[in-house]
Image 1 (spheres, helix red, strand yellow):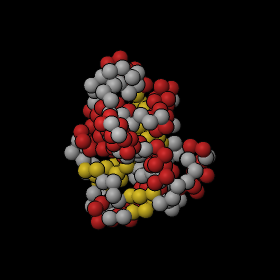
Image 2 (image 1 turned 60 degrees about the horizontal axis):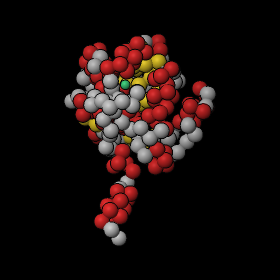
Image 3 (image 1 turned 120 degrees about the horizontal axis):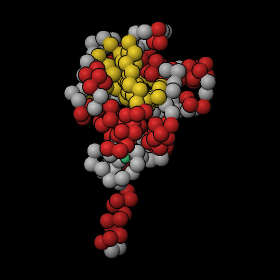
Image 4 (image 1 turned 135 degrees about the vertical axis):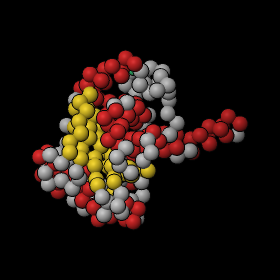
Length: 230
Ligand SMILES: [Zn+2]
């Protein structure tokens, strides 16, 4: 075996997840070289599409186990396309593009600082293997890196692989998601203000089910942060 063969062999046996952590320095939207993961031109474009909202306890959150919902975009147009690309086309670096954009908003940045712990919505082992990464975890990790919040990825787990929620209607979604999450290491979230991270909010049944399970650990507050609302 030549030296090159040996190196190639080593590279190919590195688990996919660790390769995914090396992000290319490009804009997540247009793909041009950019150190901040978002070029000026695309930033202007995203600003036009942004619909940053913080919903607190209002009517919109009736019958919910969480008390706040923050979102950055409406789930449409170039945003929808980019999120789908991020989730399904092996583009983990887009997490940085989104986080860099959202943390530039003072309202969002200040509001995030009111929490203590970030918990990403977990995905099943099977999905993790197929996709190579959990899209919500990468966003949570990047937010944690850029703020003072602790990332906790060892409390909420997904115990079953279910049909994708996007393929179901509202009633089916609620039924489909029931009982699929489990809380472990309960003591870690006691008396904590928790921010749950997900990519898309449609009916809210996924983050609501997560919140219902997290409440068992007696946190003082649960808020939700998503990239886009459908
Ligand atoms: Zn760009």
